[in-house]
Figure 1 (cartoon, rainbow, N blue to C red):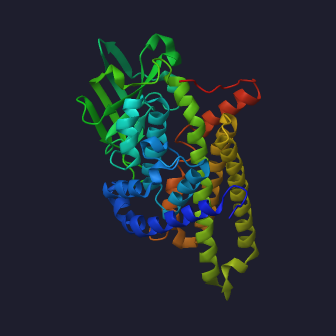
Figure 2: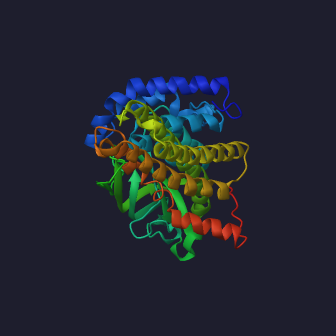
Length: 389
């Protein structure tokens, strides 16, 4: 274990999480993958163990631990071989809850953050739209102020936990004529009249409920505004750095899982009188894949270290997601090849891993968009600044 970033306490946390996942999660994965639904009880078990609160304030039931506990949480989630299950957990803990914690009023945090940490409420973050994709500034969902309420109309898509969550954190335009300077963040309960969700059928992440969500004259109290009106875009951008690092970490973790499985398989699979890990072509292909994974892993740890110290590492986190998601796809593709015909069989882990990994370069900002952000920062000298609440 890397002693530069992980202490004995970190290692004990990792072991307890591993044990918990093997006992409470792994036996249900096949059912959840088949049904496309993660059953409710597991959220409460995660909450009871404190896993949703590792990086949140103690005032709301959290543990307020350093970022490397979060890194461990993300890494081990990738090793149960269900990208969908993992996404349900981290989208709740780090997409929805990040906004609630950063922008929510005390009353909002008391209600939503406390219940999210305990596993009694599940959240989703609604930013992406059917016509917008990565173009956050181009969103069409509106929130019109009417007296002491806001009325929302529009739609969102590709929303993880979009069907079964209890509350929604929603970005909408309060001043459409201002473009990205007219976006605000809101929180609302699932049972608010006018909210409907349609489940989407996906190539991978089968266990997670991903939805298209419609808002038809959804009326919410004005106090459900999170942070300041028209500050939504900088809030979203600020948290994107964290989201990108999360997806970078997920990528190196699933690549490592694939390599660990392939290593074991190659030592047990015999051809032409010897185990296949003795054939130079395969040994060298494994070495290349392993080296690519380690480079990303060490880079991601270094960015987490800087983020933990409070640095605004938007460029580096963007690089993390761009490089790590590409690496994971390539490594897992190679690991499937190591298994030969068995790699193509559903009862072996690589087929699902390959499908689940493929979302990496798409979700949370496509690789094309990330390259443009890096180009703006490196070639055009653009400097992104954190938002202030």
